[in-house]
Length: 134
Length: 142
Image (cartoon, rainbow over all chains, first blue to last red):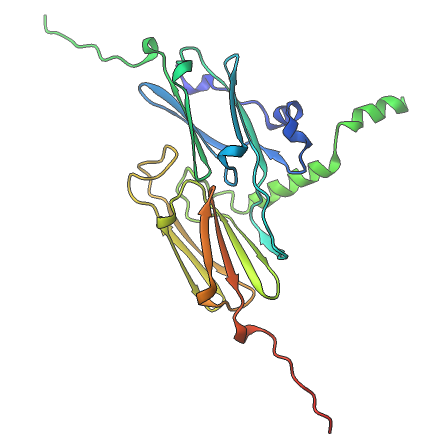
């Protein structure tokens, strides 16, 4: 099983399909990485400005969808001098490969970093085969 | 024909498209910064009025104790370094660092600075120094 089987929908497709498109904020695909371990896959996405109450992670028909609503910046009467970033809404999706143990999927959000752990089914995990001398 | 064109364009909002383009352009400058490559130049945003300033730093996956902030006149020094093995997000072995100096529009009061880190955004609230505020000059009649 390789990372190539985890496909990403384009940001435009996700915007058209979801209610987040009705928000005044742009909807963008967050920066992400996929890591392969012996017994699991890990998807890590950077979604600064999103709290756990504004985050939705769903799996349906082998499709993992992630939606996060970014906070509004409280300006308190201040004016923008310059901004190298703003806080958008985030959205992305991944087609999960076969051989994922759906019961063991875990997600955690830590200071804007979402980590989703997808355990491999036992038959997909790496097994070491002992070699005996003949 | 006119009715068909109206139906096609009804779902396309040019203002939302401009917002998205604006967001993408804002990202272009610090595009080299990535939470996954250990770059030390995190994107910042600066807001201010005559009395106060607010600096936001987009730097997800850090811990509050990693930051080292200091002020010198109208310069805000942002520094920080992760603790080995504690980085979040699959980068446990990577050394994360931060090093930037922000030029503020005025000198600030060092004892009136508040900083907090939440949801991957470092927010620093600063107050303008009294000495830096415009002084009114009274005009006396001759």
